[in-house]
Length: 158
Image (cartoon, rainbow, N blue to C red; front, side, top):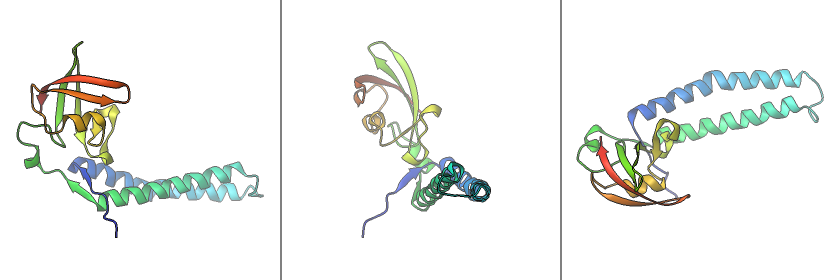
């Protein structure tokens, strides 16, 4: 029997997933069912694009519900004491300078379930995070990215 994937996440990340799950179950699901009902009233389902679209959305919503339930069931909450110390770990924010031009960037390393690059949260599975985990302030690190190699110096961990 295969073991389930563990999803490391912060307590806030788990709460956000629980809110999304509640919204999908109580709001989105009902909206999609209503769209299907309306589309059925148009008659012939074989050439009914509204019906097809609503069924596709229903499949997406149900798939997302299943995914979130699995993530929550297999969540491993990152405890506050795991965030202490001076090394880059899951749940901590790391600031680094891109070498040699000195462009500074800050990211919080989180589990894949709560990654959101637009909010500065990167997955622990990303190339940048994998290269930074376990490192300390002052360390120079070479990061393999899809765009090529990038060298950085860690300036702050919080």
